[in-house]
Length: 158
Picture 1: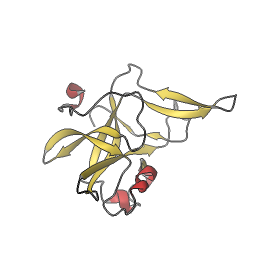
Picture 2: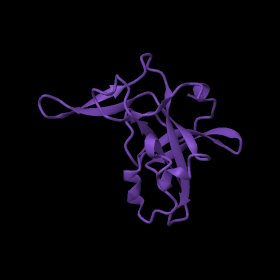
Picture 3: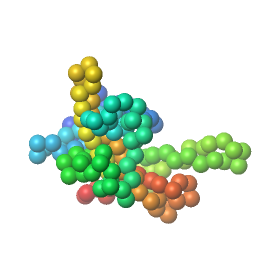
């Protein structure tokens, strides 16, 4: 991971097979002309939000409407990030009516990055809270049979 993204991986990082909203995701960002990796809460928590539960509604941001939404528009220029992953899950309903997870990954199982946005704020206890959202788009031909959206997956050079 350190080699792939050219960063020092935070000591607080630990692998997991699934990441749920409000859990901490590994993001890579440029800050003060240097690339760094940090753990950020998944679910954007804007500085103006009065209720932290809004973050559950802001886990994803539609690429098509980023410039229309004030919560995202102000972040596009300075607060972009890579959200590090080796796969993602979409859910489908099986013939038995039960939800089944579909694991999507690269053919070689390697690491990749979702396009994301991040922000920061101070909570009521005076602690710094950094949070992020994953940018989504229309699905490609592989994901389309399972879901009508998918994360924006960036090529390695992006």
